[in-house]
Image (tube, rainbow, N blue to C red; front, top):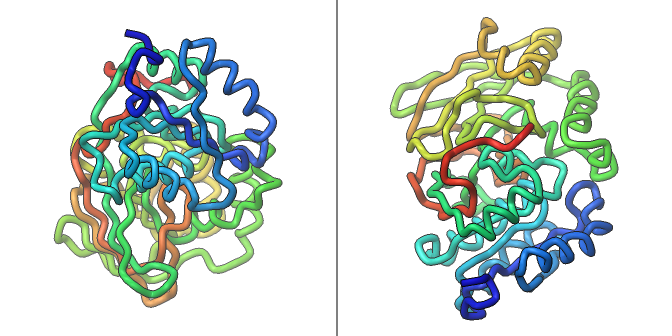
Length: 320
């Protein structure tokens, strides 16, 4: 049975973020539609016009009975679509896919669909795997408690604030370069803060540059933050970046570019975890999959096998 033989509500519904990739996606929409149609699928698309709108579009599609949503953009677009599905309590009946087109395509790369052709092939073959999601209870921008989900990472401190402060025009430089540029720019400010951190009930209070909670290996556009982190093992990998000086931070960033060598440095520790509780006396933003995810304090817990993701089932990673 071909995709177009499916009932209309079961066919892929493409949620496209034209602003992803520093705006490059806007110029690639025609090529995307051609590729979709060449695979024998109908290019049934909706376009986001502002940050966060992917959540609303996904929720509305789910309410209308859609069972297959495809995020076309970067990690932030995937994050919004997944949050829309989870907010509707529809993760069991709705599957999610992605055609990677943004600056950060780390989720797609970790799931073996880092290139558009790989993603479309997985869709055509009907491949699907279960992926863990992180559930985050934190403080929303309105000061009230909010619940959000992530697939790649949740983090707080100096390193994630790089991605939050990277301007859109800089993202045109590619996947990794914008984040490296902003790393140098942010070297002039304070680089650590106090955190109260509890990992599966064990306390690790102190001053840290960053605390990051990983569900997959990559972040920051190809940087290997937690080598070997599996998206379907029911566990997070927590990395505590200690009170590092500027030189050590640059060495750590370079270590990530070299496949995860930063974990061998003094002052950087890694832990498996199911539940992480994090707070700070300083107003601290939370990053979820490279997007603003509210503020601390936060409780971060793994939701095993929560998401039905359209990706190769053998667990192979795509080319980096």
